[in-house]
Amino acid sequence: MSRYHGITDGTYERFVIDSGEVRMGYVNESDRGTLLGATRGGSTFTIETEYKDMAVDGAKGPVKGGRRITKVTAKLVANFIEFSTDLLKTALPGSSEEVMSGNTHDQITRALALAAANYKDNIVIIGEVSGTTQPIICGIENALADGNLEIACTDNEESVIQVQFTAHFDPSDLDTEPWFIRWPHDSSPTTTTGV
Image (cartoon, rainbow, N blue to C red):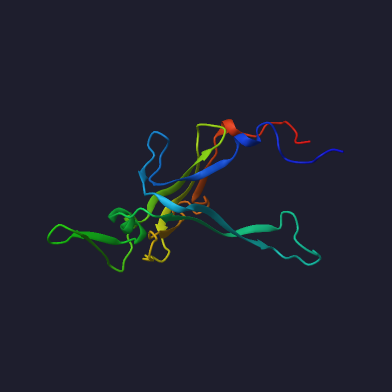
């Protein structure tokens, strides 16, 4: 009796493994941008897509070619265990820092206004791919941290700050979705069957 499965001789070379790292301003592997900090609980990259079925009399259900994309929202969520002034300012767009008298603390405050500079060129998750030295890079563009900021202090635990970044379309190019995935081409599937 044949067993049916998807395993090939290259299967174990195409896993995305471990937690990866979150960076801001990634260009390429030579210019990886700024590491935002260590995480606990991982990070996620999500592309939410809304479709509309264009209803036509006589169609009993969805028709091939009769759908269109009406909304795309790309997000990246990271759970940081490592805190810094720069991370807190990134998590609170529009905020600024001031060194307090005595030079012991940075005070972070914010005015109720966002500027173009508050949008980051990109935020990426760089992850390890099991069968190659090249990483997977999942990124969002024109990123703005737009989730709530919460710092919880609990006995016998370390605080983790969750930061949600949302991509924004470039106003000069509303047809290009503001996200990218870079997959190493040396990890493409083989033609070996899994039977």
